[in-house]
Image (cartoon, rainbow over all chains, first blue to last red; front, side):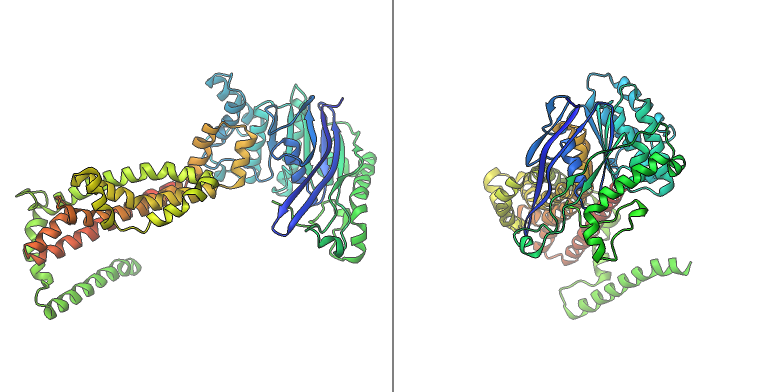
Length: 299
Length: 254
């Protein structure tokens, strides 16, 4: 039995015009200590899937279980990092991290909680920013605080929702490397599920990549019954990335196995888009490896 | 430099124009004292602002102080009731639906209507005045606090969920700080209303203060003092608003 088991989860949203099915019958298994990336285009329901996996929202059908227990609500052994940092602006970097430690580890003394928070911030290279408020920090530093907040509670499972999506390319590279290092350094081998729209990022960090396959566009007759412009998203076959660590982007650019994995993922992702690709010149160039929006993400 | 000069000179010029208009009006209406006569008859109150000659015959600062103290108590009572109500309505759509009609009906009721009810309830003028101030001034705080809670971004609620914060911690560490700027806007508006109500309640109950003074001087036909009281009420109200405005901008930066 795998550590994380996702069994046939579906989710739809009620909108003013009807029901929109986002995910249907999604299943996935993840082993303990594994780093799995779920790659998909914007609007394919990635964030919805991550909220379901992390317990922020409940699936309409199906179950998510971690370590043999079914997830109902956010688990106490998990942590989540969001794309938009989600730091509390009225607290300093240290206070933001401490809040997480205090909530997750009430058994520790105040000093121990504080020590845990400072150590984790030091690990992400923020020893000089303890007393800075989020708005005094750059985007990269904010996301470092958010990552520290997640690691500070020593979670068994880490959920990352496009953690580097809002950062510039250079900061992105640095933080990807730091995340890889943090996951490796962690003596307890944290199990990580990352949502991303960057194939390159997925190859750099993951043991396995799961492509999200958006359903085919629906014809008008079926569309009138709801607001589905496309059939619900499903998951493709996981693609293993058997590359030695640490990996670097430069090395991946020429590595044969990486090239193979990349082609594989892009083929899986674009197979479903193919039909539309032929008719629309606005479709993304698959070679760029970053997928553009297909439809608006439901909020 | 010239910009600064204009910055200060223009308001002064405006005030001068208003005084001229006042003077012209006093020429037309025989009972309206001119600016000069108003100053002549009021200077005792202004130059000896803290002297106490009798129950209502006191320096203007002392009178303003009585009124301010009454407002402070009524306002505090008002926001002590309004803030928790605002939070409750903000977090619970059910409660909002339940009480919104009552609130909308109570909100436009004039202080002059609440005061007699206060007198019936409390038998004394002082608690009745506080009651009227509190009940009239609480609504902006209720509504702004409620709006503030509703305006909390989903991100912060997600943080509370993901960190598995207790209800109490969520309240103190997320809801209150996120709502604080809205709350203060409410307080500022509430204080403005409380100051409006004070005059009416003092006039009706005859308690010492700027409003009581105004009514008494009207009854003893000293019209210059009515103008003195009106100007005092305006200036004090303006200063209160400025003070609250400063507190508000301080909080916004957090």
